[in-house]
Image 1 (cartoon, one colour):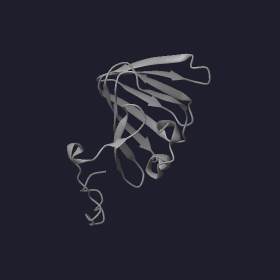
Image 2 (cartoon, helix red, strand yellow):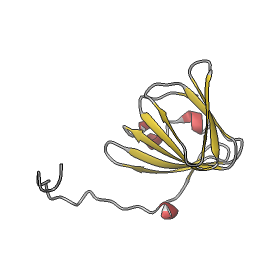
Image 3 (cartoon, helix red, strand yellow):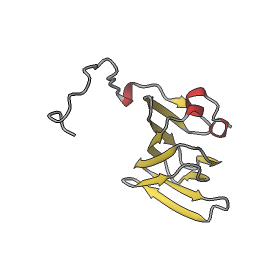
Length: 132
């Protein structure tokens, strides 16, 4: 639809603006840290890895898009990790809901993760697998 088709309600109070460089990073295990921006139905995160950092096997109901801006992550998918993908700068991996996965940083890496719905465990700090 275009603005000519329907007039949306006029309420700009919920519009927010962020600058990644001004946001504090949350330290996690190893050299991993992250910055989060969330709305009611989506979440985006910058996740920073040092070479050798690992994300243990886990799953979540949230759909996930991982876009690598710098570096590379190697992923293992499924209960036995038999599906493997290396995602490098400029590439995206789509992880459906409830798919077991783990990852290893092959080099210092900056990834952008998008989740729908937002990760409540990340917001509440109950994501023990990243805090180990």
